[in-house]
Image (cartoon, rainbow, N blue to C red; front, side, top):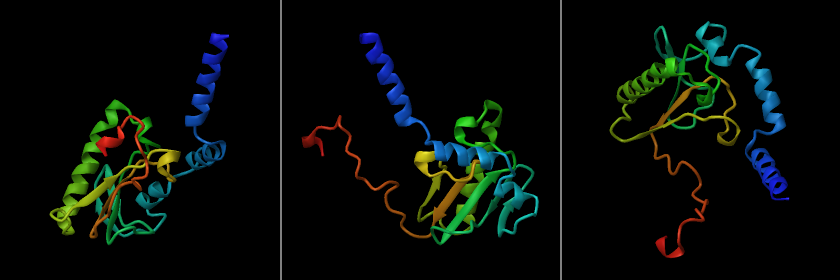
Length: 158
């Protein structure tokens, strides 16, 4: 009986933290074709490019979320950070270097900026080609809505 309960808990836990079927299907369909970022790189889609070298491209997204908003993307398509291989780690470092340089160039290095990489469903990733958002030019507020209460935190600690 104990073994059955443990197995049931494991299955339910996995399902609770698994991607939804609809998301998994959309992801599969998007991975079967060129990403929008590959199309921008190849000149098939227009973009306001602010940086490009042999490995990285940075451009203004279609829907800016702050006055200064750039997407910094490696040329190599890596669907999510979870899919990152050790031999690709230099790309992440280079993405952050480009972000630093763009923040300086566009005047937000001193006032502050946010760097974000969304990964999979719970973060809202919709393009399955890793990309770093550089966001600044206004106060961005908290990363999340601050409503989560850690059950480990004692009331008197708040």
